[in-house]
Length: 118
Image 1 (cartoon, rainbow, N blue to C red):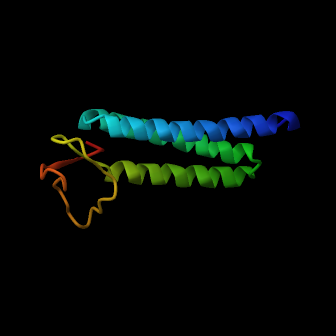
Image 2 (image 1 turned 120 degrees about the vertical axis):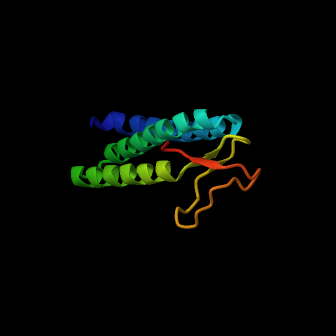
Image 3 (image 1 turned 135 degrees about the vertical axis):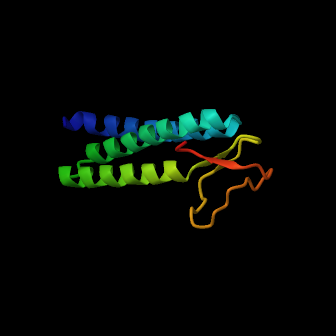
């Protein structure tokens, strides 16, 4: 990369990553529709993950390290997307549910939670 463009590109990627995270958080907090959240979660994961990998690449990491980080980000995103649960009744998003505990009901209203992958 041209030396004069390194800092502005890196700063732009970091600012984009922060804005994408803020945007995703605002959309998830303001929307109570479980169906809309099911559509938003994969898109925001792809956007934030690709911006993170691009930031690592621009910082000058070796290609093998960028590839390893991209694989880790992908696997983390898939696991996060599979564990996402949404309540159709109150709009609660639950991302920290363990599949082993079998918590199938919303802690806020008691309605049945739906998986994000369905």
